[in-house]
Length: 120
Image (cartoon, rainbow, N blue to C red; front, side):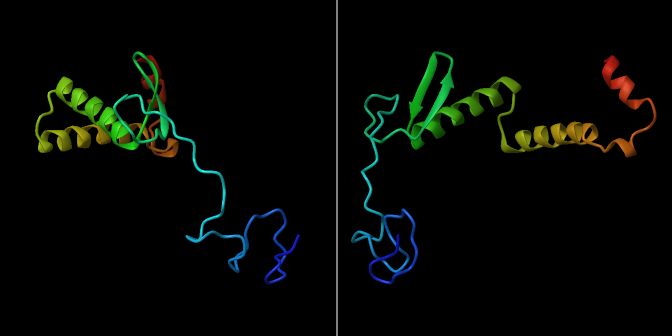
């Protein structure tokens, strides 16, 4: 198929780069997006993702998705005893040092070092 305006090959496309087939705002004229109810019933924003929660699957809009994971992060920090930004940064640095030791390439390890990791 070719564009009726510029005669360029467009295949099965609904619009062309020259502007043919586009609406007033420059978007393709497709069906409107389907509204999906957020898990928070008072919310009027369409859900964008599905998350596995302790009570089952939940559809969240962006603000509630961010709130869900922010609350989980604060609960984890409280459980670890991390209350200030400096404590959180120190904890992350310590974890990175631990992981960096495990991520060393095999050629930088001493012979038999892998056996010690499997024994522990």
